[in-house]
Length: 233
Image 1 (cartoon, rainbow, N blue to C red):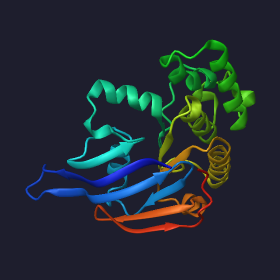
Image 2: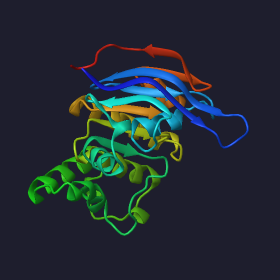
Image 3: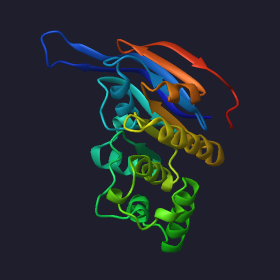
Image 4: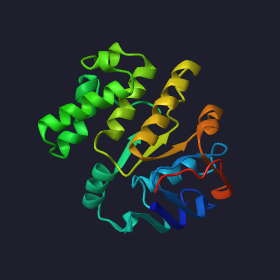
């Protein structure tokens, strides 16, 4: 079952004399439960493509369908609500709220969705335990290492049971040990919850873990290789 369908997607910038085709006619499908990496040199269009998949940027043309809804056609208010309920984000810079504890950071999106308090509490604790932070529930970001903060960000991204998670260079600020821990955690959560993960990355360690590697160059897909077809329906 396809979670995301991208049809002939383009993004062109006209800020210079010569138009820049950041994304140039890309078509891709992502199935439920995939663990995929989008790779390529700087300027190849990775971040632009991820931003359009996540509804953070509008395409110049083409479609981004999530469960048969073309999110590129949604109004700003509907798009905000759609992102809130369907897409989890993990960023390079963690983006945790400094004054909130790990538990409060994970709960934040669920509070916006008006979750039942007990269900929210139970899911938050279970997620923090699953990312190895059961003992850091009441710690604030400045009391945690970079790797621990990124694990809180992963728990937060999964908290509201999104259809998929977009991870943009999630290991860029982590050492090799923290990266290995984070990737093992995300792979286990991917398998346990059958949530699609899509990475944008330069990191070979992420590429090695991915079961599908999509390579971009000059805004186009130049290869799309699956390492395994063991994806749950």
